[in-house]
Image (cartoon, rainbow, N blue to C red):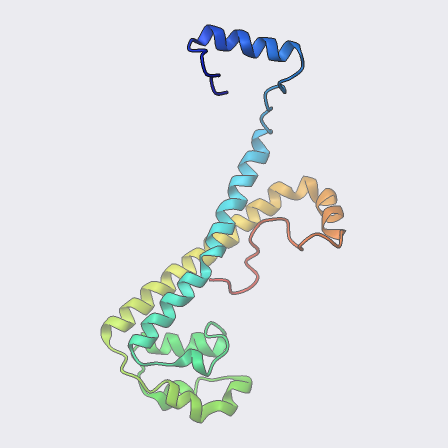
Length: 187
């Protein structure tokens, strides 16, 4: 509580606060939540932070590919899908032939082979491979950490499962309980 102008001592401040409390003009001090709730909140915040920064990592990967003149994102909607990951893994291992990389396409992406070959026709050099390898290692590490953190959060929240389901059932609720679910490719 800030001191009122003219009151310069701690004793006068204490007397003033006591007088306010006697007349009911000041609320009681806020109580602290149980330590389990604080810990769970911190864990959820960490998981949210890791998931929230996923677009930055995606942008970093695209930037490395763009410097190698590889325009994969212009043809492939999800660079981290099965086809995209296999192409990027082949690039990291030394594959640079656009035709060979395009042949790794799966499913409906195979219809776009000519566009894909043109998009993959770049100059992938050693430093691009190192950067991509580091980015993917970091991505796998974070995916693993998020998965383990989510398992721990789910285990700690299991006693509150019924209350969470009731809350999630309301139409005004956004759909998750504030923690990051690692089911999708958010990294």
